[in-house]
Amino acid sequence: MQVAWDQPEPQVKINIMSKNRAPQGINTGSPTALTDTQIQRYARHIVLPEVGGNGQIKIIKSKVLVVGAGGLGSPTVMYLAAAGIGKIGVVDDDIVEISNLQRQILHTTSRLGMNKVDSADQAVKQLNPDVELVPHYGRLNADNVQRLLSDYDLIIDGTDNFSTRFLLNDACYFSSKTLVSGAILGFEGQVATYKPYLGNRNPCYRCIFPAPPPPGLIPSCAEGGVFGVLAGVIGSTQSLEALKELLGIGTTLSGYLLIYDGLDTNWRKVKVRPDPKCPLCGTAPSIKDLSGHTQ
Image (cartoon, rainbow, N blue to C red; front, side):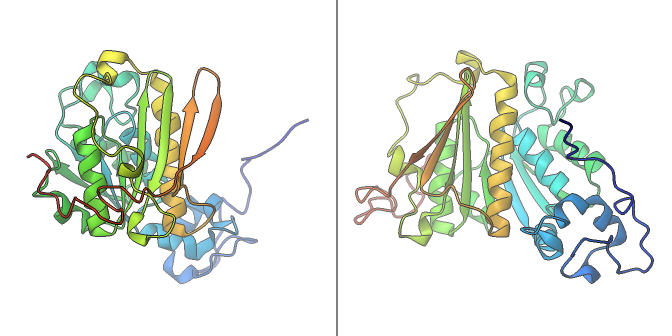
């Protein structure tokens, strides 16, 4: 049986008869806000009833901050740019090294030694020149994180260290920002969406992991290794969840931990409830601000 999922169609290579006309059969919702080129570029989105023209306009107007331009940040940035996110901020203080290229698809051999945020900017310009990539050089810390978060609608955690992961969780809670978090090691990965500022059944990262593990307990990717393509699986899933949150479609991952085992090709969706004893979002929180995070 042949299934033609993505065959080119005459009406997608559009002959738009007037400036504001969409391809036949595609309901753009608000066509005057989309250019002819945008209608062509995002036609496969626009034809989806869950997205449509209004949804694509919402994507174009959205601003997303991606923390980390490495294994998880690479596919995340690429898919967000392809989707048409209008403004993507990227935070990273590292340069491109040859050991990155096994999994960090934003970067190329020709850009070895370049700042990762600059490499990301070049990749995004080549993929979708309408997207604005805002480079943020350096690391997040307690002094700058809330200022950075304030410029964006949604935050994606693509970091590889616990100190930044906990800082982001706490800062997003205090800033009332939705956080889409991912992690990978070896052949396993996990994704979760956190929006505890909404209360009810929305836990935070600390509801699962109250405090960072002791140094050395969990190996880094450099120490324990990571299967390169796993970064694509988890990073792409983060992009999917981020776009769903921005559009308000589908089922949110808030309240769940999605775990992937690459060796067994097995997904598990584990229910996570808010912890009343959580030091951040519990009934008697001990964390009142970001002063406990070292610089």
